[in-house]
Image (cartoon, rainbow, N blue to C red; front, side):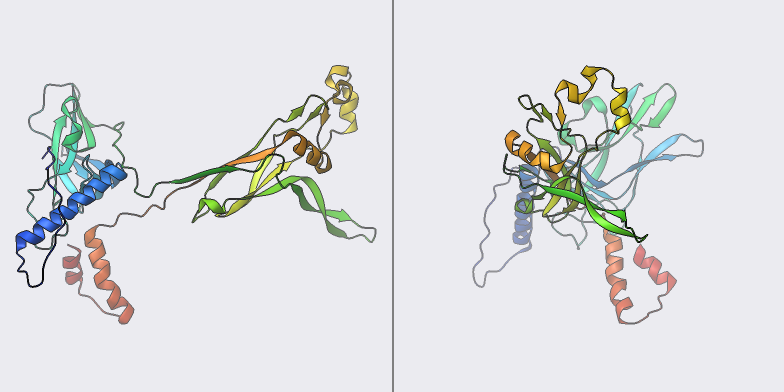
Length: 364
């Protein structure tokens, strides 16, 4: 079980009129499974729990831990083989436990010798009793667990106080086959197309009413990310790059109020707000010449007209990073999928009254 089968992979060819036996179909199915397992471990590095397989504690009448319940789910072992548990499983605690203190791990692993039903499909099968099919569960001490032994699902601590299901145990997680799509880029230094960032502000008119007038509060630029090929709006991160201070002219650009807007799969808008100048009373309170920007020769850029020549001279540009996470598909057990496939055509055609006993048998 812990050793990998060394199978020579061949291409199966048949001729006209050839009589095929069951062994031929089994060999072809095994060869297809081996190719899929190679693909899983070589290209996707699939190992660990992909979804589900959550462990819950089971207690006896005295309140002591008596077993572990495993929820349905999917995992992959170190060989890339699928470990599919289609129904909840109740696992009893091990009998032969080393003297405490000791930590016992519950492992799920592939069992090619499992009894498969006649409806088995591609190395994955479920028996009529609703057991786990081609996977088995085993207990091993933590210090004796090897990567080939399977995927750890739970940990039970045995100490002087008794036995408890560990709450700090972290299961190995399989990386999804659909990886996050990450892209980065930057605009051209000294050639970034900047424009005014305006908002509509109410202005009082002599007639007593108010009108909305565009007011410039900063600068903005549109970043095109269509070359990344995002299919959904990713998470964008952007920042202004380049020197923000010019020693010769004494100009300083306060890069503290940047934001993003109008995010889409093909781009976003990078905006930078210029804080307004301080009120005159604040300038009067600055009695120290070193504290005044005017007396020290420091010029703060506060308008878009001052920003455009400064950005060209300092060769400012925008750098960005985007990440699109894969869509998470919920795991649906096989029995529930079969139930939906049976009931959906009946519901779409006409209302059908099902016998409650019949529905219970189908769910089982």
